[in-house]
Image 1 (cartoon, rainbow, N blue to C red):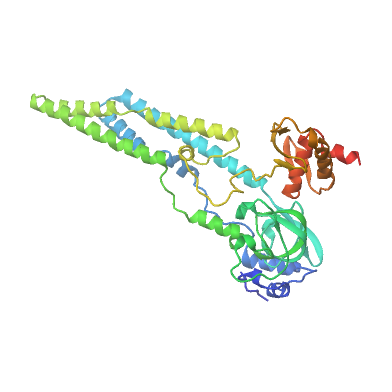
Image 2: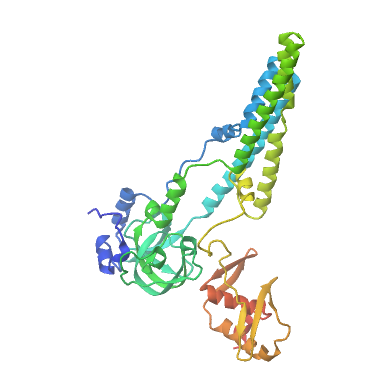
Length: 428
């Protein structure tokens, strides 16, 4: 039997209504045949993105610039007047400029492809009463997914069980504090960030345990809707493109003006008109800065390499200049614009309040004298380490955290105070 998919506003439905709408079971999940049929009917849980530019289109795009058009025109004129050396020089500039841009953009594309291959999410689903671990792409609407701390949520879903489940939805809502989930029905017009009975693709489980019925996959997820908007956005000129186009126009006007004056003077003096024409065109070609495109490309390439060292991949060279010319960013959220990390910075004791910060992985106090509260501080560090369910580990010099952000902040407090939480736990 075919289900009606997608189901509108699943957050307004009760657990029983959601299970009935997707013809699934709270304990057994879908059958294998149901899941297979729904994969065929509704597709995979992935985004259908625009196909990338072909090899030849990427190469051709390197020549789509007003300055390059002028250089090609100058090279053709040079060939017409048998100025072969100048034509070869201009052609070399065009060719080198195109090669630099082409190879850098192809390298960025390869890096993006490698990242996508690494970003393979698996999830635990319940089918026919048994837990299976599958690729998240193969999830079907109505699948029953088992969630635990550390899991990446593979698709949008309605919770049918929740045991202190907390989810980090900062990638979607911008809120850095985890959301406590439940299975209660929500009122009409509940905002996305307040939908406590729903989980969303791309967010992660920080604490607790839960079961969720998948209500949206691929483009039907909230993240998929954002992706569709980004894909449908029209490309606009970058500030650098506009500046180069304006410079090209100015150069053309200046060259035409100077060439007209030179040609007019030659005709008044009675010079041979063909000689005047050839000299005027040669003057125009010589006045054009052939090195401008390659200088701009090298400058942008250097910026791209600097950003790559900091872990940022630039797909288009001109985007480097766009980022560099950004002065103000307007936003109404902070979680996705910061490190999304909470730190302890104030200690309020009965006798005093102490300000602190973490610098070079060490806890630094803004006041030199904290002797009155030293005992309380030691106790606080022990409590922070012991009354804690979070974990901090390192993998290839990269810190990996799991748990509530506040508890992670308390573990960092213990570690940076000179006494790791492992040592504190051993003392008990």
